[in-house]
Image 1 (cartoon, rainbow, N blue to C red):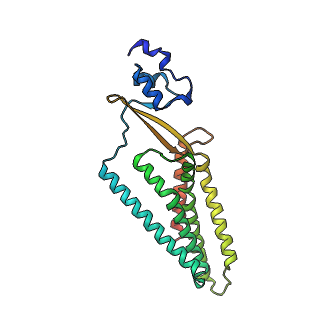
Image 2 (image 1 turned 90 degrees about the vertical axis):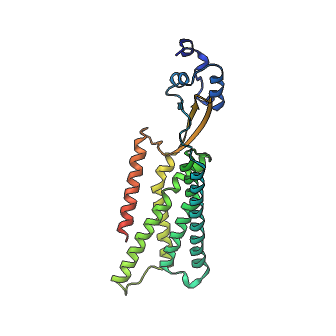
Image 3 (image 1 turned 135 degrees about the vertical axis):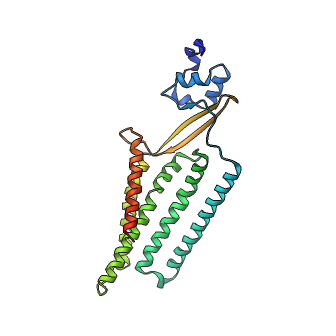
Length: 251
């Protein structure tokens, strides 16, 4: 390694906000080696002197996009049909069907506000949408699922009471709507930690052979107050475990 470059102030990042693809490209074109840039500015920037590793074959991309597009279209069509049937026909507006309507709305929410964004992110491993979309995506990755599980639990309890106490008066529409609102409030509370911990993290990948720079954005949910990224993993595993246990118990 060239000693002159190690202490070359031109290779040192003075302001974090100045760091960009143009800044890296400009420094490399003027003699700052990628490895030197990464070493000198360690702790301030995420710079990797390797080509971007998450590049899929065109056929893999086509299959992935086709699969996700089909799932999204089928989900939207099927759930909108349920919504239309329940809302359009007066005789279909029963307590049980209100819960089915809520399940359809939950599925629509995660399909429209999460599945497409997460699918694109998982395919390219690069968040190309806005910071607001990142926050919504993290929130909608948890809230609708919790709402679905809570709804199935309530439906199971309602069925149990109807069988065990057939003569007991069942909740009316007003009480059912109130229960559904409580379900969404509780589901929203479950999703708020992921929303509050949302952050966009930028990484730069430099191909040493081609001298090209790729700017990679990550949509994360690990900005917890303790500053420990493992908290995000623990939180995610806790939510997944609890949701699946509750879903299993609801059947």
